[in-house]
Amino acid sequence: MFQLVNVMEVLVSQVIEEVIKSDKTICNCRRCRLDMSAIALNNLPTKYVVTVQGEVLHRTSVLRNQCKVDIIRALTEAIKIVRKNPHHSRED
Image (tube, rainbow, N blue to C red):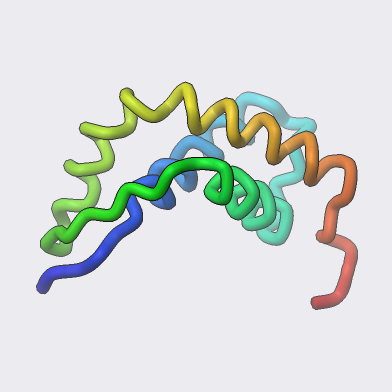
């Protein structure tokens, strides 16, 4: 079955895991992680691909090295923003 995937979204999810593991001062709650991901993705170009289920990991590994520096830069800025104004204690 074919699916439309924003590869950048998959990559940001992978890289944010690494960044949070490397810096224990970053809030790891679901809301803060989603906020950081959303901010970073809004500042990164989209990279959509049509893929067969299961091929997503292969496609992301190819693009990951090319995009990783940009993703880390965008996540670093997103982390700063979320640290200043976290939403994790607010009711949604």
